[in-house]
Length: 422
Image (cartoon, rainbow, N blue to C red; front, top):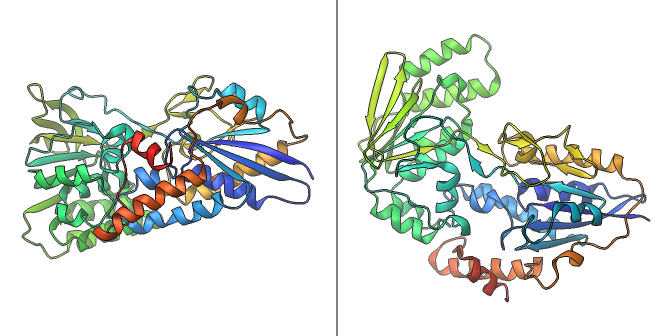
């Protein structure tokens, strides 16, 4: 029975679902040996460093990842960076197929004056900061202001705004980075605006996220009913199901009984940012609105308007994602997830996406290679295997238990390696 070797670069949802699809596709004709390569000492990608800490149910998909990782034909190579510790061309020589599953880690720019000012951040920096990503612990997040503006109309924008507008004590039982919780507790922010360029009928929020907002115990959530009425009219008599569900959820917020909390999160539609102003740091944002120019004073601006893939040597990119045809890049190189299709869909979307690419890969496999594997390329490098990761994972969970947290994340890379036994 032939065994084909497949390398997956990136240990996030797209990578794990690609591995699962390979495991499910094994037959009497083909079996697969799967090596997953991850730059960080910790796997799970955005499930660990992107999902909002106050949404722990979404993180339970990690149980699926661990089942995949312990299925018997899977090896984890953490703390191994493509382009530094191993080269893509070498992997292609060693493996029958190489799958890029590195996601999109760069935040798209607004392209307006003032983005260089202190107090302007991308969600691509802010989200991993509060999620204890080792590369983002030193991000400067100025919270010594009473007003923040989040620009965007998707779930990331909503997560960012919610994290800023929550009473920080609500984060105590979560796996938010300890340093971030401490910073939020000192924060002066009491008003957060979510500014969308178009009307509510175009918003990319998902309705379950919207329906959760009125449940916030210490935060007012404001949406103008006239904005939603106009959006319902603009959407027409037969809007798509997702649009209708969104508008219904937003209408419920607009009609929700008003509260008098000191913290407020307000949605502004048809607000197009044209300039960020300030003397050395953010002081106000200028918007174009249907009624003319509008200025909002603030000390923090976070843009959440999408992500782009981090370029890799030897791979062509177009519009922020890897150039591909149905997941095939070239030769025996393939791509899945956000790096393939751009930042769209939810975590589960990666499952069907990966399954389609794996079908394509299998159809292209003929005779297995017999030229070694990644161990021939990395030498004595400190590699976090699945066993090492399980030790790290157990230590974090154990640290969280007496505090009523799911875990206390370790954000320091050297400390992660030490916990792993190095």
